[in-house]
Image 1 (cartoon, helix red, strand yellow):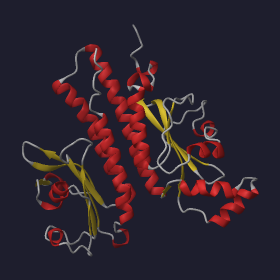
Image 2 (spheres, helix red, strand yellow):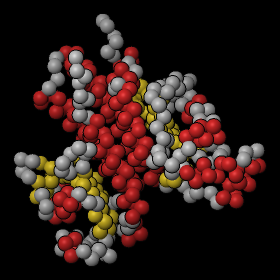
Image 3 (spheres, helix red, strand yellow):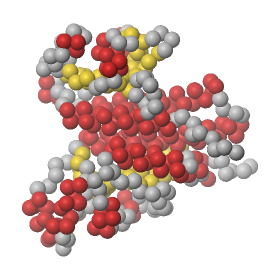
Image 4 (cartoon, one colour):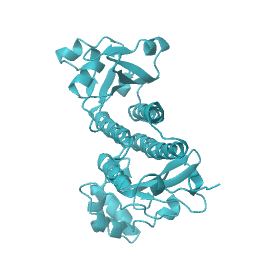
Length: 346
């Protein structure tokens, strides 16, 4: 039997063509604000590195000897099966995020970074520390300042969702490839396969958002056009009765308002906008976030992300909103990537 279509014989670029993956990687790097590379298990660069605005790529590659971290990060003799991270003596962090074609088989890795995780070191201390290692702190400090700063929980959430995005795109491409080898994929079958992977991304979005914000509970509501309502699709931390009854008409409730106005709502005791206050029914909730899900090129939001906390010590902040915007954009990129690429003219 010809095994060219089997998972163990395929590379990433067999499944997703390089221009499409390059566009995806460039977009992800812009959203996350960090450099991104896609490498094979043997460390081969599969597309050009993606650099966010504000980074001097040439100086960064030269000063940090970019690429030398790969042997520690993705050892050829023992490839990581889960997301791995490495913080080098300079104080910057890299992460390797597996892109899986099968549950235990990675066809490639996203290499994320360099970036700074946790509090940024004070300049004098940094220069003294790296000077003691024989490095030029004066040259390196501006480079360090140009790197994106993430909290520990923030980067964990972003990496978790990035893994789901990359893996879902590749596994969807693989499933479509396998199915079309047997019979033409279309109609109900095509929608069923796409829906399966979209649901995985929605679940990962909710888990990542709750991890980043330390929310008590949350849900993803999706728009049901037949009933003209937003219905709870996935929920964590909510009572079954609330999930079953979790449907709101377009324009109604906080979810309907967030979708109609396409804006993220941050709600707490300081909220004084009358339209919001009138829709805040649960007084036991200390803080909540309601955010529309709007895939690229979609004229209307397709759903709403809801997060809540009843703990006064874990109120949501503007910093949480900033991270959630990134997670929502990652989700948007994934959903847009599930659409078939346009066919080339013959």
